[in-house]
Length: 88
Image (cartoon, rainbow, N blue to C red; front, side):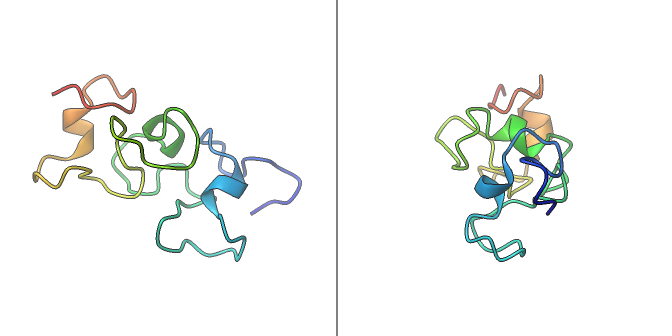
């Protein structure tokens, strides 16, 4: 992570929210501060965590999982307008 930047990967989530324990690794419960789409589902972390609080809230897609609800349908297919909330 770049200490000169608040959001190294420019995904809309501050680095301190992505690397909560500040160890430079992507640990359980964290998103990548170097990769704007941690789960590679085509929706950036800052959009999936649309209120940008660093937590997965009930109506949000999970930026750490490409299938938030585990139904075998990827988030990019359920979040049709890519706003970080399920639409299907």
